[in-house]
Image (tube, rainbow, N blue to C red; front, side):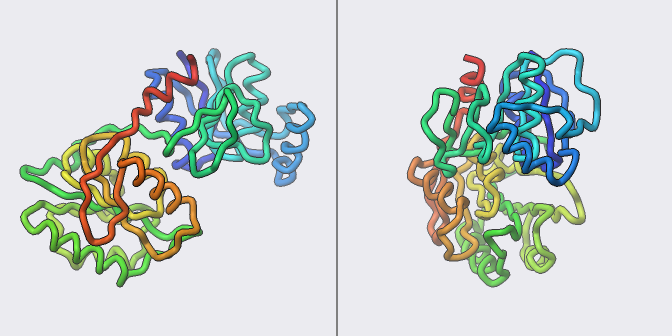
Amino acid sequence: MNILILSDGRMGHLNQSIALAKHLKASYEIVPVRFTCKMCKALSYVLDFLHLYKTSLFQLEKALPNHFDAVLSAGSNTYYATKTIAKHYHVKSIVMMLPQSYRYDFDTIFAQSHDHPPKQDNIIELPANFSFCEPKGFFTPAQKSVGIIIGGNNAHFTMRREHLKKQLDLIFGHFQDYIIAVTTSPRTPKEIEALLQSYPFSYRVIFSHNPINPIADFLHHCDVVFITMDSTSMISEAISYGTSSIEVLPLDESRNSKFYTMAKTLEKEDYLHIFDGNICLKNKKIDFQYYAHKAFA
């Protein structure tokens, strides 16, 4: 099977598409796409409503492959092109998130539960974002270990130093006989990086200094993995691979975000625990391969 992946340049979107292709053991080619002008995106909503599909509204940054069996994408800047190309080449159209503002008539839509998707035969509801984990060998502890994955600020959360410090103090108190490892993300604020430098981690990755990703290694080796609540993709990855118990670190008291809604739903289903000072051994995992094959059932 050959899959064409359209990319809007956002890694969180692209990684979901790549994860589906990998779970299907399919070959894939990535083609970046963008709207031709600022008004084209607004026009695409109207044309989609009218069942009109014009290739002039978007530009591909490389040529399409000679053959593909499906067009796959994630992100609002890709959906119109996905539908247009799929119709032109008579192949399946698959999107990895609910394509809001477009008609829900793609061949397959994977939609996260926190987006409250409608019940339709072509919509496959998921508890989290598609992910695919492959350990890289960056972190190979010789004894029992704990991993901490630190994200950063986003539109919903601002990471507060003192709040995170209290959480780190509790973690170090709980796991005095463990190797404790930490990794950050491209979004981690400098003051949080400085805070992490002040703790005696046995293994530490500060992404701004060393841009590697040991998350899959943490999930492969650690007894418990802590993840800040600011990233649905990191949480999704954690509950799809390995045997680690997952603890989600709330960043503030806000409960009015998709991040909290997602984490709370997953907690009820025993995939994770929202950290409250206590450790709960919740390590149920999502079988994304099962969901992947439903797209071609």
